[in-house]
Length: 195
Image 1 (cartoon, rainbow, N blue to C red):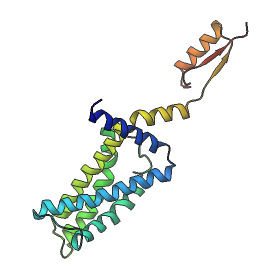
Image 2: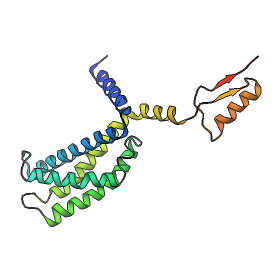
Image 3: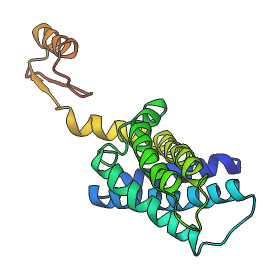
Image 4: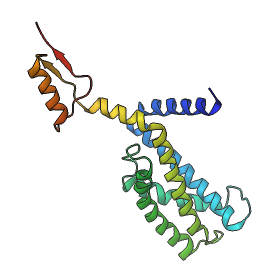
């Protein structure tokens, strides 16, 4: 096995382990990730706006604190943390785009329109775009590693199992009818016959 396969395998195992965490722990992890993405987007926006690397103090820290103070409550209220692993791929990008667009309007109005001393006004335009990219990417990556494991867990936990008494022709017809109907049964369905 090469290094890439080993890393992907280990990450899949880590994400499968995270699926067993309680809901509040999963939300806490995503809150921590989103908070760090807000800080990283603010720092990178500073770099893109001023063309120089800056340390995390003073105006950078204030801009990042404003970002977190706006983003996390808005994302929570918009339901972004209720469906953490439900969407992946392009659906994840669409589910994230509306809350981040609302955040972008609020952040841009505070930083760009109103203006805060020491914070360049371009930060208000660049940072929300970077945050959209970072949060969408984090959801797509999590979906990539979790898609199979999460879907299997939902499938096995929500679909009832069935045992059909009578393994003859009528029992086989009943199982076929259940499989084709709106009532979903999980595999394998057991047929029991006393003959």
